[in-house]
Image 1: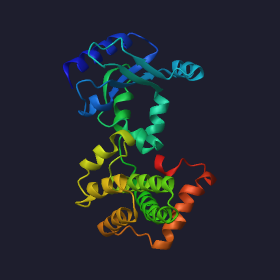
Image 2 (image 1 turned 45 degrees about the vertical axis):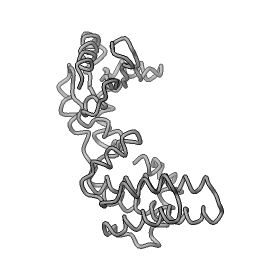
Image 3 (image 1 turned 90 degrees about the vertical axis):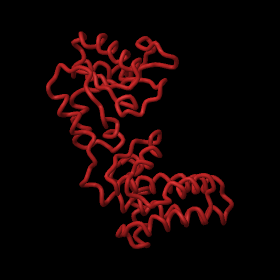
Image 4 (image 1 turned 135 degrees about the horizontal axis):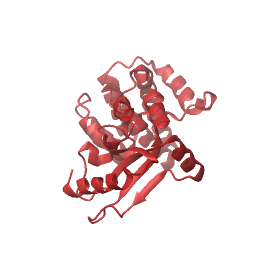
Length: 261
């Protein structure tokens, strides 16, 4: 963390700590994780009282953006307004993206003893879902490989690039799940893939080959690499069953699309 980030956090704390509408200030984002560049913004969560959260929910005032707290070029603060109930939901059944937002977070101040143990419960990999997720993610890669071959037959550029992107996403998520690492959403996805300790030696090379030059050759190489890396327990015919359930029929259970699990 740069000194000007520390100064920004101090100003945020001095501004919000006296306000009885807020129970605590949680610092997150690249600053909390130690990934910040010199001009990075400061991300945070303001934990509102239930009354303040209800008021803001009704008015749509759940985001906070300002340049008033920073004095460095390109600097700004970017926050979300949540309440204790919201944090409890994330800890109980939050998506990986929601959980990953709390990795390495810390409290700049707190007026509520529940907050510190609660934010420590959130950034935990959901072990109970891991095996099912890996089967679903692997299935998406295999079916995506088939879509690539169909796209080349039809000379369908949209299908080709879409299928390659989906294969890269779910192949990457497969590796993160194998390593019990939370999916951080797209911005930090390749960063986390690079950090994953257990993966094929040529994973990132084939990942980028698939994205930069989507083709039957790059898609097949990507699929073969993942197939050889681990026994995922999904026979070939089952991959299409899983794909249909997760991508075409997910509305039946009202579950979010697979990429948001």
